[in-house]
Length: 367
Length: 247
Image (cartoon, rainbow over all chains, first blue to last red; front, top):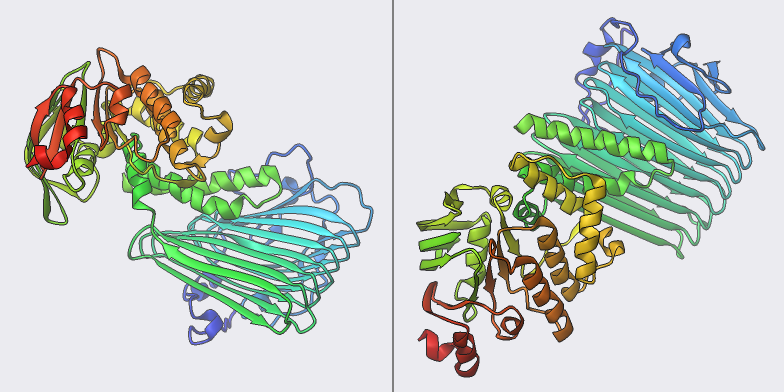
């Protein structure tokens, strides 16, 4: 890519992002090679596995099964980063009455340069899938996923960004049909900066959407999540639970918006955006937004930013627990609110461990 | 075991303790009584090592070591237990996790091996049973949704599991009904009334001292101990009030 046109901070939806590293990463050549450790989740049910290194499938380490590799049927995007994704990627399409699939696992590893990849998930009537995506490496990993859930379909999507450096930008366009359920949980627990964009439409009656996660940042790291949940039909339920932790000079930003269309009566929306500052020089930006055009809806939202409770820290200390260990436990409990919502046990346990490892890394840093 | 000499302490630059001296030997129970604002809770926090409680003069030794030189968690590992007047709620951390973390941190600090999960569960079940706390409650977040009495009983469960040498109990009797007071008092006797242990009971009232009978009673007023005596002093205070004695 020769011309990388990036939005500036003057645009409202990009004000908290720092994209300045991207042109340099985009100009790099990938180092190549497969990561030594591939953190596949150990789960009894098996399921398709895909390893992408620098945006290319590594066939020897993958077992795509029903997942298609190749041209992806996806509408172009006008999103500043997602528009770069091209046409080659992966597709998970499940018909009604398909056989149980197991857990779909996708690992995206970057060896230092930029790669862009689209994905398409389409679940037909009453189809069900659970997908875990893991991000590794140190380049710029850029993704656009288009997700369509037909009547009664259920998708559990969980993503963990463990990349040690670089940038990870993930954009989603999600359409949820009647009585269908979509849950997305994202954990950022590495050293990369992130930009997460989501546009979730509850397009059928009594659709369910959950979109949230935990953003952990230290050093000069920046995480930036931007989410719009649109209730277009009645009886929809949406939950956005975000927990952000900023240490050192790091910044976590969450802009979460709920829109309720005129006819979307009996909508039940809830937002909980909580931030925890581990140092006074960290920054948490929270921007909860509601736009409601129906008159019979229930929408709750709460946004708080705070520090670890001093009384709790002394209580731990008085029982013999050293300060850093107490801080890690209290911070772990804080982010668990978001991660414990993951319905798939193997994924939930792994994500809680990843968050714990991040917090333990914090301990190592200060000792 | 505990030697406090001429202790001065301030909170936000305001002097609270003004020359307090006290010696506690192994096998003894001491009660500290006194009017509101006398510095009773401050004494507990200073001994516990809470931030913001600044010692401006004096010394405190615990088993011959300089207590004031240790961080709060080191004091606990050395065998000091501070019972809280208002036990803290910790959402997201279960009692079992809290206590096992505490116990293992103390053991590591003392150079001992960590306790196994099975041994820990057996130990916590025994202590919880003795204080009428169910294992179901032990698996719930620390003190969250517990009544005032349950929180105080939970403090005693913690004390029983951590098995300290010296317990400083700050108004452990406040907010308890008569039955709970008996359970807590008997818990203190069972866990701490031993020749190698000692207790400093900070309290307003005689009623706990009917169950946990002190060897010594001290009256704390104006940041100093103004009178010391045997158990009869507590009865005298109950009859005549602090005014007459602390004056």
